[in-house]
Image (cartoon, one colour):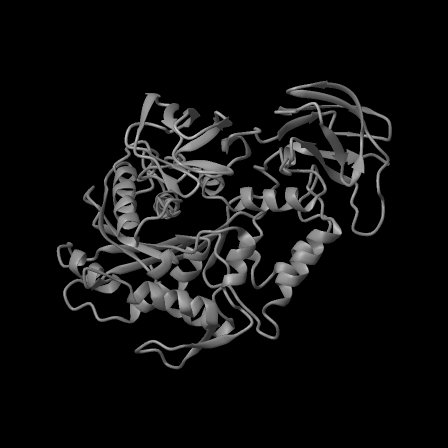
Length: 497
């Protein structure tokens, strides 16, 4: 693709294609078959590829999509209709949190990676090999990835370009899928391959990296955010054990963070992993960062890791527009009985959304406007998360998106001020559903209540518990009506020395 001032760059395009691969990755909470979810994925990906505001400019069309059993991995093939004679193989890895993603790679065990035409086998992790195998053997209507690519290239002009790309675990798998495609015979039209990975952990050892780099590439680039922990795995994860992995304003590591990183860094055992490709650091400083997760705590550290690794952060670093987001639930009517009207407020809640109360789907709802749905509570008991699904995705479960059958309403802390101080300092706590029996804890210490209102409390900070395993940053927890408020970065209080 041209790199003129009015044209997006290849990394902008391939990262956008990679971000689109995460469309509708979460199954509907009330349950759906893999075929039903695949249909949502196809509709959502098609919708995003047609979006002219993205770096893909609305010129790419979906040719094939395959989802492995259990929705573990996904790949799709797309064609550019702008006359550039370019195509893309896009890989999506397992969707989950960063720690789960890294542990899924099973890097403590290595296996041979041996393709037809290779001079000798090379070494990759067992987990990466399993994911690769699923991607290249998954079929849709009897058609596998390489067969789908052959079909679409059969209509190409001479010298087509095929981008092989993926973000995160998808990028890791792409480093195996791309050489696999290179070893195949292309009797009709021989493509020129480009490998572009983003935030990819390492798939194999030095012999694997050397083999990948020895192939005939039009481009072979590894794009990464220098503040992202995931591409440090598995060749440089120990570096993150330093107190200054994230410089000021943080978060700096506490002992719990160092323990998690040390555990992950030890997973490869004696295996020495090496990244293939030409390094392309997308930044040179601690920018951007999420200012809401900079305190010295495990949850803030992992929150910053998630932010630095996110598709949206990579698109921002590349100067590319973000892809369309799925629906979001912000707040719901918190309490009611079966059949009661429930107002659901959020974003992306347009026509065609599907609403679930826990694992129970509802069939009757209507959209008051794009950000409000009125639904009627189905049969149920206890406290359930209300979540909304459309072709782009499924809303996350959030504290203020809970519905309590028969009450009382769930208790949530939304903020504290100030968020740091000493013994005896007055702290204002904002939230919802603070009943008259309210108690407030700073870590495991009970605070003195000064004033009470249903959505605001004033307390005096109790003494801090300072010992091994008890950090200076604690969660402020409100107990009321049988609930304890869920912990979040919004309720953290830092004891000053």
